[in-house]
Amino acid sequence: MSEKAQPARTATKGQQPSDDLVATGRSKSPIVLLIVAIFLGFIVMKLVLDSAAPAVSPADTGSPAGTTITSVRNDAVADFDAAVASGRPIYVLFHSLTCVPCVEISEVADVVMPEYEGEVVFVNAITDDPSGQQLAANFAFQYIPTSFFLSPGGAEVVDSFTGAMDEPQMRAYLDALVQAR
Image 1 (tube, rainbow, N blue to C red):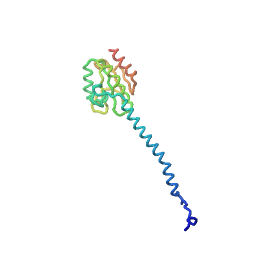
Image 2 (cartoon, rainbow, N blue to C red):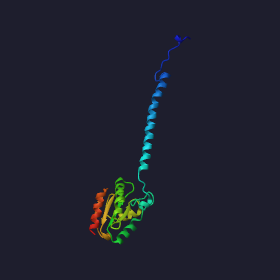
Image 3 (cartoon, helix red, strand yellow):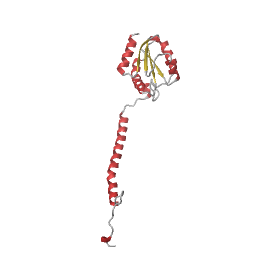
Image 4 (cartoon, one colour):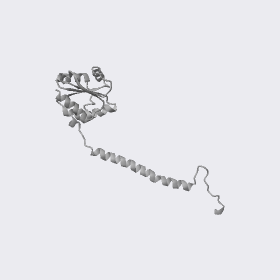
């Protein structure tokens, strides 16, 4: 057949001629490259931000790596008994390591409580643990996180608070507890 007699290439329903397929594939390449470049940009930005954050060594905090005063799983009953024996005001925090308000108040306590070392004894009562549940049975509350501020020797509950609180609120409760001494 001569060139003039060749049948014209036509697309059937749902198909495009092969020249269009090549052109379509080429037009997707810049989009894919752009997506990959954005993804790599996020990774580089994350690495830069992580390296710029100040490193806190366990030696700086006095705790093993990854632990804070509110994440330590001590015997809450024994800690409370020791706090009572100390004769100092007591702050008992009943919380979980998983609920959002509990995590929020735990972060605040991790920052604020070291400022009151020697003045107020902190009792960390994780309600997911048997000892935290045992200590909780001695207090009247329904929800966590709940904070109890006790007089020196634990003789009476001076104040309590249910829910998360910010640093100024926690300091106000602790300051009042220290002044009531």
